Every structure is written in C-alpha cells, then in structure tokens.
Length: 385
Image 1 (cartoon, rainbow, N blue to C red):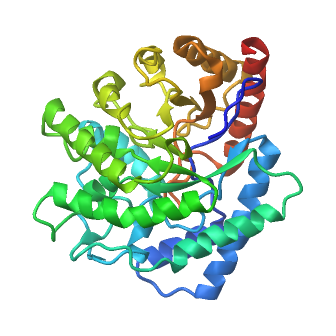
Image 2 (image 1 turned 90 degrees about the horizontal axis):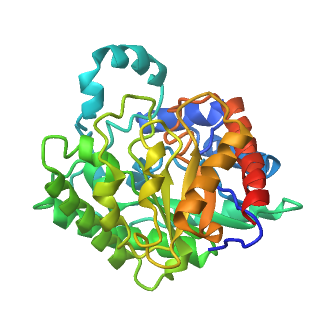
C-alpha cells in the first residue's frame, strides 16, 4: 500500500456515480425484470471507462472502477454465491425511526434505486459458485486502465465484509449468526484473493462494524455489539489468510445517508476492536458533523505502529463543495494527532453511489468535491512536508 513522504495522496471510498442508463438496467435486474445482457455489459464498460477518466482528471491518486460492475456494494454477491433467494426484512435504522418527518422528507428521493433494505435472504448453503463475473470485472478494469496515458499511483477494488452481508441479507438457513458469518468469510476468501492477486489493494467495506449498532443491534447493548464486531474481525482474519497486511485497507462507517445519526456508536467504543484487524489501513468518516471530532482518538498509542489512516475529509451526503483550505485543515489535524503525515491518506467519508440510484450528491457535484480533495491535499502537503 503506497504512501508518501513528499505529499498527501488522495483516494475515495469506492462507489462513484453510475450513468443513468446503467442505473436503469441494474435497478431493473435487481427487481427481477429481464434485461439484455449484452446491453448491460456495454453500458457497464462505457460507464466504467468514464468514471476512471473522471477520477484521473480530478487528481485522485488511488482510484478504482467505481463499482459499476455491481448493483450495490454488497447485494451483488447473490449473483456470485449460492444460497440467496427471497427478500430480507431489514430493520429500519433507529435514528430514522425517531424522526418520522425526516423519513417523509427524504425517502421519495430514494425511490427507483436498488433497495439495500430488501436484499435477498440466505436460504441455503452459501458458497462462492461463479467466479466468471468477478473475473470479467477485473479483466475490464485492467483493460480500461491500459487505455489511459497516465494512470493512478495505485488501484483498489472493494469487497464486502462478511458482517454486512450477515446483517443485511437475512439468515434463515444457518443455526446462528456466527455460523453464517463463518460461511460468508469462507466464500469471500475467493474474492479477496482474486483482487489482491490481480495487483489491486483490497478495500474491505465494513459499515457493519459501526452502523449495525443502530440497526441490527439497536435493541441490544454496546457489549453485545462489540462481541459481534470482534467476531466479524476474527472471521475477516481467517478470510485474509495468506494476503499481506499491507495490501488491505478497511473502510468503517456509520451509514452513508444524510440523516440524524444521533444514535451512532462512538468511534471510541469500537476502535480497540478495529485496530486488531489484520489490515494495513483504517478508512474512517471524519468530515460529517457527527464524527468530525473523533480524530482525537487516533493517537500514536492507540493505533498499531505502521497502520495508515485514510481520513474521510469529504462528506459524501451533502452537496456543499468543501473549500480546499477546509480539506487541508482536516488533513493537517489528523496528521498532527497521529504524529506522522506519512501515515495519512486523504479520502472521503463513504461512497457516492453505494447502490444504483441511491445517492445524496448530484453527479457533477461529486467531481467538484473530488477536485477539492486533490486541491486540499496539495495545500496540506506544502504545510506538512
């Protein structure tokens, strides 16, 4: 995993705006409607090519394929694994339940998107059944990268935590949550290894390690939630067996939605568990108003030596375009707290299009935000190095 002793590198959390044609096709497919597979492949290629080019134009150093080969950041596993069918009954986030007026205001904007609350259930044994979509996704990314005259400093590809699948894709087959998580981790090992074998950094998407406190575990205690976090991290360690630690980064967030978030678990509660993960970097939300203060936890004594921090300095749920000086100040604050700017990468709080059609930020504003990220990182670099 590349860092720098000369400047702050930039990245983002993975999902980037899909074009309208791709959204329509992926939503239709998710809803069980027939789609033309050739048309879908061509649309994925066109959309992915565009998103690679836009990242490079914005100054992103560590980029990806925008997740455009997938309908969402985790439900796509239903097409690659056995055992999934039907529809889950995902509990509504506790902060949403407290504010019914917010729900009435916000929910109409999410109509016509892939629903992350109506994912399939695990109704049979979960195994990684078909590697063809994974191989096609990686091959397409490689081919489109080769088209660019100047490429990224480094590339990454995302894959979900077994915990987010276990929490959001309801289990009606395995005897308990632990058995379900273990089965998912074993299946996901195929994907984790393929990504790193292809030369990319593996980004583990783990909103479950924070967000599930006010979702799946909303009616339970902090202690019970931390047990779940520890179980997932142990399962991830098994799935990462043989993959170098410095080829993996872990993204943890509290849910990528512009909502109240006043039930979010504090970073302080989960950080002792997060730092035990066998990863080279933690990617954390630090730009949004609920978690902007939590950089204080990231002291040298709290993190393992050498663990990088990918600081979320761009809010992915608001259409405000951050001023580059604000971005620089946020980066500098994290670097000074950690005590070493070479251990800091500048990123976003979360993705911008975590499921097809599900986004809070307009597409043209997304690119302006990523330009501000690069400009702010350049300002911070001049002060830090």
